[in-house]
Length: 177
Image 1 (cartoon, rainbow, N blue to C red):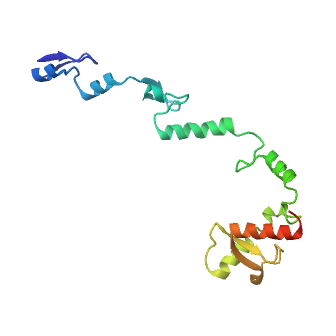
Image 2 (cartoon, rainbow, N blue to C red; image 1 turned 60 degrees about the vertical axis):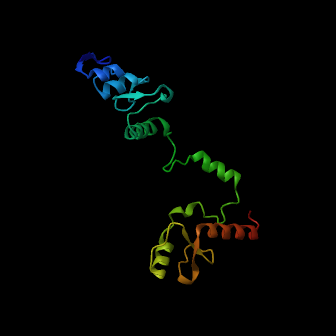
Image 3 (cartoon, one colour; image 1 turned 90 degrees about the vertical axis):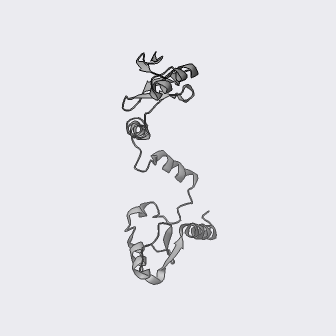
């Protein structure tokens, strides 16, 4: 029996029993397309059409996660990054604010300048002593507090948490905090 597809208008053959049961579409894709009640919007990154259920329509619609990530990367670099911010997304005004709110937090006077003072020398020295690389959560503590003194007897491995606790305790004992 010849029938006309109610979605695409193509003529197709169907068994009389199928027509009796209500067959109206020539293929599963025509059936699925006819059942879809959503909207078709262009992808905000590549422009490909995207079928979206009405409840899932958003301000930005993407055809894939790759398009979403690519758009987000472009948007972040062009619109979100503010001039004057350093790498690592640290705003200079927050550094100043932290210094104002916690003036006693820096234990040594050179603590701010020390960021480039051969920062890895004590870690390299400790790795040579123990014969393995230090894990990222391991800190090297200078027992006598002199950061240039990298003698093996002056270096101690502590977890980052233990290291911070030790420095807070020392600061309290000094009356700095």
